[in-house]
Length: 152
Image (cartoon, rainbow, N blue to C red; front, side, top):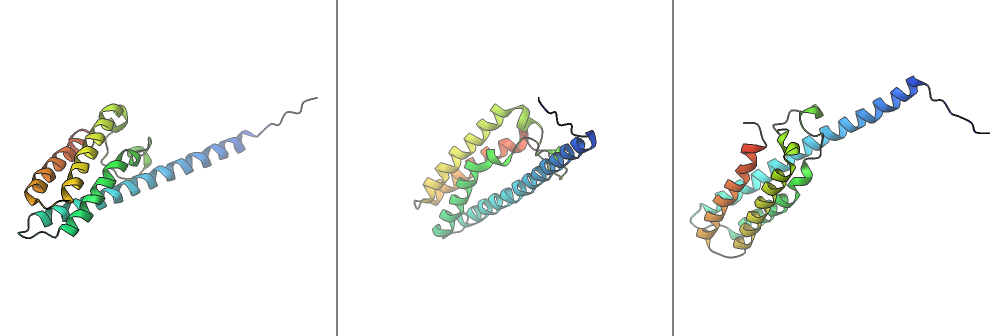
């Protein structure tokens, strides 16, 4: 004979509510983490640009900044788990198009990573002119996401 376990509806609701709360907290953490990572990316890119504008840039600083930019460029797609938009309950400028246009967002991230890789390669050399030109290209490629996937 089989026994049937009946879970009271209040208990079921409590379990579902707890799971939902944990998910929401996880998504809020994802938004906060994403924002911190973008601040690090931005600070590194600014440091790189500040150096290449100098008459005698510190190539060691440029190489370190380019490495941070490259690493971040590879991780960006992971910073946007589904559910980490405005519905996470944390102020964010990300637009729903990140998830509704997944192929477009993935391509934009891939393009940014490719340009960041070129930047890192050029940073290994000593040609500040090439670095300046590539930094502009990286900024333009980065800006693609700002226009399509981020609130103004």
